[in-house]
Image 1 (cartoon, rainbow, N blue to C red):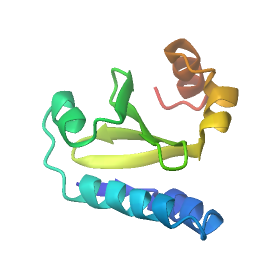
Image 2 (cartoon, one colour):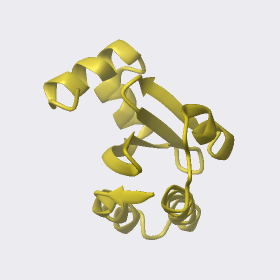
Image 3 (tube, one colour):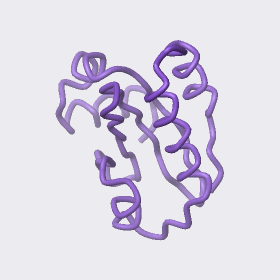
Image 4 (cartoon, rainbow, N blue to C red):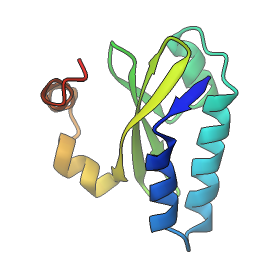
Length: 112
């Protein structure tokens, strides 16, 4: 699977250079997405139990618990695009932890 906007993940890694566990978790996420052969949503959950489908158009949050980092990715046509990255606190501030707010944010950004 092709991973687009990977620079968002690289920026997150650079911002947290001293956090080896987080960098390894991001590298693992990148590797798993790039090698994925997912055909349906349940395939994603089998590989990544931290994946949470937040919109039926293929938007998923991944919760990297090693640093409480949240990453929003959309999956379409054998491509994955990084949409948003941030800490869990930034996630709570931006999305308030509910799918209605996430959907509103996606609409404002013209992603759905």
